[in-house]
Structures are given as C-alpha cells and as structure tokens.
Image (cartoon, rainbow, N blue to C red; front, side, top):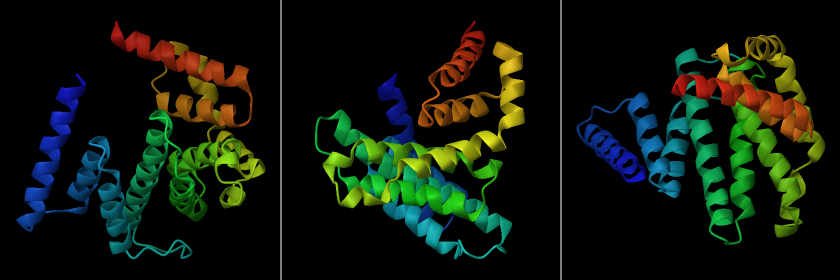
Amino acid sequence: FRMARLRAFALLLILCLLAGRSGLSTPALKQKEVQALIELGRLREAIREATGLADATHIDPEDPVQDPAQLKIWKAAMGNVGRAYKQAYMNAVSDGRTPDPVDLREAAEAYLAVWNRGKDASTTYHAINAAALTARAVRDREIDPEGASWARDEAAREIATKILDIHREELLEALTQGEASDDIWTLATCGEAFLVLGLMEDAAQCYGTYAAHASRLSR
C-alpha cells in the first residue's frame, strides 16, 4: 500500500513539474507539488517551494486588508512550510537521530504566522499545530536549552484554550451525536488541544468518538 501511495505522489509530482515547465502551473498545482514533495520525503525542496509560493502572494501578516484569494494561498503555503519543518524534526526523532531544534522553531513560527493574523475557525488547524509544537519544544528543551527559549508552556496552553473556545459549540454537537457525527476535524483538533492542556479524559472522549466514527465508515 505504501509503495502504491508513493508511486501516486511521484506521478503527481511529475505532472506538476511538467505543467510548470509548460507555463501552465497555478497556485493550486504548486500546492499539490509541495504536498507530493512532502509525502516523498523531499522536505527541503518542499520548504523552498512553499516559501516561494507564500512570498509570491505579497501578504503582509500585519495588514488586516488583503486579497481573499491571495490570503487563502498564503495560509495553505505557510501550513505546508510548517508541515515540512515538523516532519523533518519528527523524522529525526523516529530514526534515532538528534533532531534539529531549528526545524521545530521554524515549524511553529510558520503556523503561528497564520494564527496570529486571524484567530478564528479557519486558522485553528495552524493553531493546534503551533500549540503542539510549542509543547514539544518545552519537553525537548534539553536538546537545545538556549535555542528553545522561545517555547513557553503557558503560550501553548493559551492557544489550546482559545481553540476550545472557538470550537465549543461544534465540539458539544459532535460529542452529542457520537459515532453519527461527521465533524471529525473538530474532534481531532479539540482532542489535541485537551492533550496540550493535560486534560486526558476529555481528550480520550474526543478521540473515542473520532474512532467510533472511523469504525462506522469502515463497516
């Protein structure tokens, strides 16, 4: 299954590159190219391409007035920058190598750039990643005590609390519906937010409902 999946992403990458060389590339295709690079483990290339795509939008994170279409592209591109840096860090951990703390910081900063620009339901994906990465940096501080000074547990908890406030109504509805709920995104996001806050029973309830939903779909 994994080989088939990798072959599919290899083909997707080829198609995207051919489109680019033919002058037919679009931001949407470039996002697919970045996704393929990440899935194929070509993370530094993915970071370069995603950063270039984000820069091309000329979005100023401090300016509240922006072209909605360009803002959407920027959010997705910054999410991919964060995802690639995060994967680089986690790959090192999985392989038994000492991870580069810069990767963790860069991942968190990419996600935070989007979250800090607009803290609403459209950016809680970026927010929960930022919170989880910040909490991870706190736990891994011994790897780079000075470099990890940016990471504060209070900051991670603050983000997690805000996420739960934003999704309060959707979460209550999803938990009430149980396995009939299709809102797996809210369940997963809030479950991770509860983990950041150390509320294990609440996290277990979210993930239990999530698992029941997945089980229902597989029947």
